[in-house]
Amino acid sequence: MRKMMHGVAYPLLRTAVAAACAAWGSPVLAQEAGAVIVDERTRLAPVIVTANKREQTLESVNGSVVVLEQSELDDAQVRSTQDLGRILPGVQMAGSGSLHYPLISVRGVTSAQDFYNPALTLYVDGVPQMPILVNQSLVEVERVELLKGPQGTLYGKSAEGGVINVTTRQPDNTVRARLRTGWSSRDGNVLEGTLALPLVKEMLYASVALRHDNAPGDLHNPATGASRQGGVRSSSGMVKLRLAPSGAGWQASLAAGRECARSSQDAYVAFNDIGSRKIYVQSGMPKSLADFSQRRCGDSQSLAAVYDMGPWKLSALAGWQQAETDRSYVFGPYYTAQPENWRQDMQEIRLASQGPGRAWDGLFGLYRQATGQSRRYRNDLPLFGVNAIDTRSHNETESVAAYGDLTWHATDALDLSGGMRWSRDRARTAFGGTALDFATFAQQPFGGTNSTGEGSVLGRLSAGYRLDPVWRLYSSLTQGYKPGGYNLAPSSVADARAFSRERATSVEVGTRFNAQHVQGSIAAYRIDIKDAQLYQG
Image (cartoon, rainbow, N blue to C red; front, top):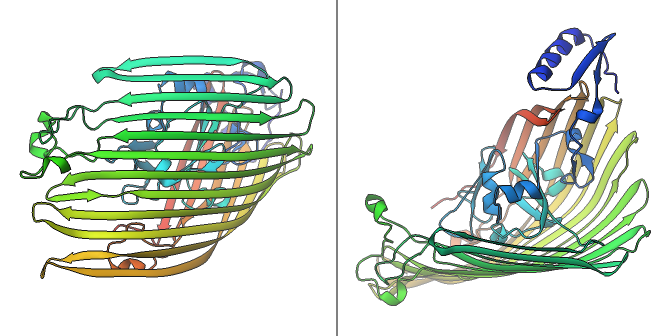
């Protein structure tokens, strides 16, 4: 039973809130001396989220957050990150014609023109996923959390649209086994199996998960006679070890996963003949080059440790990723091949408060992330027997940061919080190749090397006020950015010139309610983006 605080305009506000609660079926039972009395037993249980890098209830977050539990993901048949667009409100995830680069949009921020910087940054168990691996299978997922709007203070670069935080299930003393299978049209199928068990009870636990997914397309290639083009076939697996002695104040875990996917995408159908489902291949193109082929294999490893210090929790995380892709297709008179190799490593250490009844909550952390990409881009004109462009490039980026976030619980109803992040980003490029001069039909060499660096300071302010046990209001001012750097697909000497960072500032006001059988939120926001990084050419 709680008693709400009075304000100057409270009688009118109380009447409006009571009417809204009644309309939504909220459990307002009686009023005594200006107090709203609520039977707490009829309310939905609080949802605990970790997307803000410390445990807190969903209703106490000063921002737009969506939480999906495993049962909701299963009911919606979510099998990959691209399927999340069906169930995450306000998020669009569409195919770009290539499994490598999904088109993601949220709150007007989109990756439609920037495949290497998705609008949403994807994290799996705290590890940021490389852009080339954003479209991936979801295996043994326990919960998915979506934070809308710029999240640069906590998550750093490329989180202007928001963050998707995927938490996978950890092994424990419970023996779990699961086998799922299904079929779809055009002989599509999925097979998934998981097993988790204690290796040493009350101490050491392990799990393994395997998945195979085949989703054939419905396009026909008249040049090669191949059918069911445009689909994807993938296999993935994950192994975990968790050391958590019973009664100890610490635990450590190791995870390793791999996913390989093959597809026949990057194929186009003529606009005036879409109903035929026939892939367009220019007449005269050699049959040996008329295939559409993509392959991507990615490996991930992570090592995490947590030390419980009572009112504070110390966490350390290191993650590594490697990926290689092959991509070849024809488009008009061109045949192109674009193999890439990626690697990434990250380290983070953070200290976060925990537990109820605190006047202050805090979060402090240090972060580093380094990414390397090597790429070859070959574009031929087979009908003319010439090469249009052939480029080899290598790009490296590194980001180091320190951040802090504080929340003051001024009263039982009012929270005030703020945060700041300092980041230093560096980028380097080196490339060289030849391009066809269409005036002379001679190969012209080009190349370049360069490096750049820039510091950024981001801030966050927010406030939340609980009107009563059902309704809570919040407001926030947040920032995000994309660092400066270089074109990851260079095609001329001009690509040795760096572009500057992009910044976003968001203002948001909203309300969240937690009533009997119903939870929800409403928000209004404005995002201003300065120095937008746009594709030109």
